[in-house]
Image (cartoon, rainbow, N blue to C red; front, top):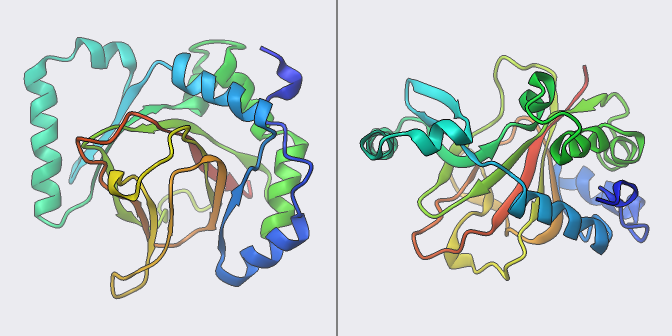
Length: 244
């Protein structure tokens, strides 16, 4: 891997214009955020070098982060039961999610793959170029660090509506770095949608190649259900920029 090109920001980005757009709605999709060479390296890491586990919750059960080896060893009956539990929770108007995940921060701290590509990605996310860019666009100089998880929403997976508020009071800006190489059809779901108090969609971001979504916490949002006929292609790195 050419480490010098990992998470290389596109030098043509107009930071002033991006900051003005972000200030209007407190959310923004920055297209072509990385150089093309850098985006292709990150996509390769996600698509070919990531041991995908499962992030899962169904009502009061979970949240669970199941590692790839444990997921592979899981009995089909257990997988079916988890799928049925998410359906039941959503039908009951409870909270649920299911998506493929590699918890990059936990893997880094627990040394799952020391100095591997995901560790390098996390370090680059927390280096000056990326942090200074996000600080400038959001107008939040107090941002100090970023966490990260690799995510892949496969057919039948989703993330229910939530606002990111919780025990972690230092979450200031949520982000989704999309590396979806497909020309993603709206019919394939997987949109990052934002909702007002009446449940109407006020904004939606399509999964795109080399696009960074940024939005302040809290905002009601979800990742819409990916139907069975969608391709396996919605690769991303997601997390929060924090002030401590």
